Every structure is written in structure tokens, then in C-alpha cells.
Amino acid sequence: MNKKIICIECPQGCDLMLDIQDGKLVSVIGNKCAKGEAYAAAEIQNPMRILTSTVLAENMSFKMVPVKTSKPIPKAKIKEAMKAIKKIRLNRIVLIGDVIAENLLGLEVNLIATRDC
Amino acid sequence: MVERELVIVGGGPAGMAAAITADENGVKDILLLERDQYLGGILNQCIHPGFGLDYFNEVLTGPEYADRFIKKIKNIPEIEISLKTFAVKLTQDKIITYIKPGTMESIKAKAVIMATGCRERTREMVHVAGTRPSGVYSAGLAQKLINIEGLLPGKKIVIVGSGDIGLIMARRFVLEGAKVEAVIEVEKQPSGLVRNVVQCLEDFDIPLFCGHRVSGIFGQDRVEKVCVVQVDDMLNDLPETCFEINCDTVLFSVGLIQENELIEMAGVKINKKTNTTDVPGMFVCGNAFKIYDLADTVTEDSSIAGIQAAEYLERLI
Ligand code: SF4
Image (cartoon, rainbow over all chains, first blue to last red):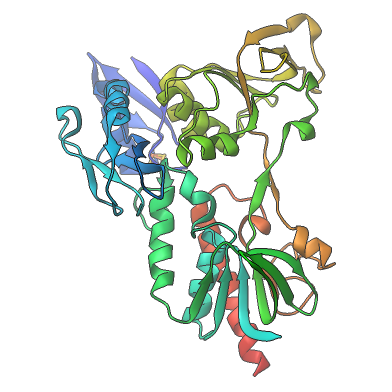
């Protein structure tokens, strides 16, 4: 089976043509670099995305602290992850890179601050 | 009047890059004016990833990208940062007048770099009929409300235009629990990056109507619905295709315009090909110079303005 997808790993946005047999990636064409192949493989097995959002800070100079997952998480988990992120309240000064929540949803990724707040 | 070597107006990615390279190229006295209470400009509200791939060869969010430059600048004693400082006037003699809390001052610069960025086009600029209810925002304003102020502007959203900020805000609204009913783009192709169409719309099953326009926004006090109509190749409405979408919020993501009022008021002309102007020693960089797609390119090009200013100052001596 052939499937057309667009690589989102960089602003180039290459058109990838995937050859998929029995749910497995056989070949990719159209990618301008190796990242495109890894992206294609993940897209058919378990699409992964970095999730960014904000966490509510209480009694701090910033109301919202921007955060991101330290690594991509499964796309299917984004909703659940957002629920967890929305429950967090911060009441301490954080620095960029600080861990805000460890092992988010047991996915072995941390939620980290992306700004000194 | 106080005299300074180099004054840079704007502490976003363009102004910061220009300041750093000017310093690296020997300028010993740099004053960086920023109207907000922190450096970084629009990057601070762009909390999504996608920055830094070209310049740092890694994926960063906007605040992280900004932080690299902010930390660097704070370690350069030759660069004085003046926050909450709003430049209100510029003259051809390179006198800059600015207000900051409690005072209004003028300084004379030997060289000036204007890095004042851009602003969003509004509903008024794309001529949408209908009433004037509340609930109409530019995409970047909605971004600021959600990401900086922690306020959700609405629950049922229609986005007019498919610029990158609009696409990114579509995803952001969905993540925050709102429903994005549709993105409406008058051209045949989305105007934002294709990766944003994929990761912001397709990932979240948000419908994109290309070749359509919002012909009317209606509501008593608050937005209640929009009318959408297909357009032909000449962008004329095809009235029989009209349909309505119920919503409480409309975002406009219909392009950016350079924020160059100070330069225009001074009667200075920008040289379209370089970062220079018709006033020697006055430079323009970043989105004030031209609208860029990527912050990385802003950094690279604005670095050139920093070098140009340094070279100009060197020739003066
Ligand atoms: S294949 Fe490589 S060059 Fe093409 S979009 Fe993906 S990462 Fe970018």
C-alpha cells in the first residue's frame, strides 16, 4: 500500500511517499534527509509529538509558565497529558529547563519549563 | 543631550541579534530599548516548538530561543538594556525620543538600528461585513491572552486566514478544550507552512476550507455565527455556496505589516535590498524590514545589520 504524508520535522515539509506492507514501512521516497525516514516509521506505528503548553503559577510575577515535554510523546496521549498539565499549580520560581512534573503519565518524559519565571 | 554610539529600538529576535553582533564587531556603547518589561518580543508568547532548527540545529520553543540571546546580552557589559521604554519619535539627525515610567527623554545616537517588528492585519483590513460583536481577535492577541495572561478568549472558534499564527492557535485552542469549527482561507493553498497544516489542523481533525471566505460576522453582543462562501478563481463570491457556522469567537490570521511608523514619520526611506536607509548610519532589521517566516532567518539577517552599524561607526572615527 502506498501512502502520502508530509514530514513535519523541519520547515521544509517534504512530501513523503511511503510503501507500507502488512503495517510495516518498506520504503520511503521524497525525504531530503534521514529524519524523514524515522518520522515516516513513527507515523505508521505510533506518531509522536512534542507537547507544549502553559502551567498556572500562583502568587508569582508571571501568571503562566510555558512548558514542554522533554521528548515527544505519543499523539494519542496528548489529551490526557493536557489534563494532567492543567492540574498543576506552581508556587515557586522556576528556571528554564527545570522539571515541573516528573515522568508525565508514566511516559518516561518530564515536563520542563521553557522560560525563567 | 546625551549621546550614544548605537541605539537599537526593539528587543525581540532582530534587535537582540543586531546588538550582539554590533558588540562582537567592536561597538563599545550600545543602548537597547524595549517597550515590554522583558526582552524577547513576540517569542515569549510563541510557546510552541519550531524555532532554532536552522540557527542552533535543535528544536526550541519561542521562549527558549529568546532565552539564548537574552542570557548572552545580559553578559555583555557594553549593552545597556532599557525595558518599559517606548520610542515615540525618531529624527533624521538620529535623535530618539522615548517614554519610560515617569520620564520622557531624548538621546542622540551616532547610529540607529530600528528593530520594531510588525503587527497583525485586522478585520478592518480584509473587509468582512456584518455586525460588530465582541469576540473578534487577531490570532496573535489570542495567543498572548492564552499563553501569557492565562485567559481563554472563547469556546467555539472560527479562524479567518491560514497564516502560521492562526494554525498554531487552532491547535492551542483545541488543547485548551475549545472547539475549532473551521479555518477559512480565501486562497487555494494555505498560507502558513505545510508542517503547521499537518501538525496543527490534521492532527486535531480541524476542517480547512481553502478557496472560501468569511463573508459576514454576526451577533448581538457576542459573536454568534459567521457566513462562509466559496470564491471562484477571481475571488468572487459564489453566493449559492453560502453556509453558516455557529461560533462565539473569530480569529483573524490574515498577515502581518511592518511596524515602521517612526521611520515614516521621520521621512526616512528604507533601502529594500539591504538593511540600510537613505540616512547614513540608520538601519532597519527583522520584521520591520520585511516580513519573515522564521525567527532563525530574522536572527541571521539582523546580525548583518549589527555588522553594518559597526562598520559605519568605525568609518566615523
Ligand atoms: S525529510 Fe528532512 S528535510 Fe524533509 S521535512 Fe523531514 S526533516 Fe525536513
